[in-house]
Length: 118
Image (cartoon, rainbow, N blue to C red; front, top):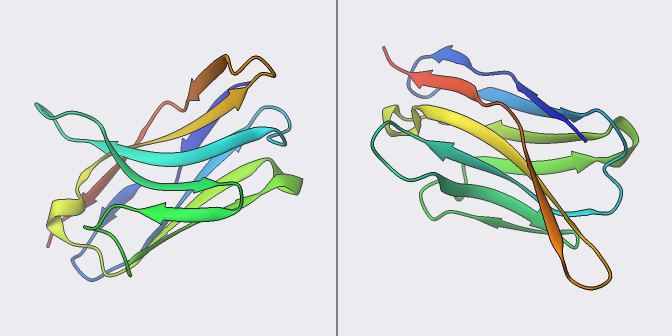
């Protein structure tokens, strides 16, 4: 499966963006799915994940970001509100498929740039 992330852009502090990640095929069976972000010189970090129907967030985005998925649309979303300059990064979506023997395959989207600046 291929993942296509979109929705990034330039936004002022306090603004909102909604990221989308559309899969080329069904995402049923992909669990967990998540959003990561990376800034130059730093490791990619987990922002939010959705696993077995539950959600988890990095402390830095709790209360501001919301992750969701729509299996019917083969899509993963990240609603980002009250954006701060420190949220500036390239955002990547990720989907994981586990096989019966617990082998897993990771799939990444190509990344979308989010810039929060006045």
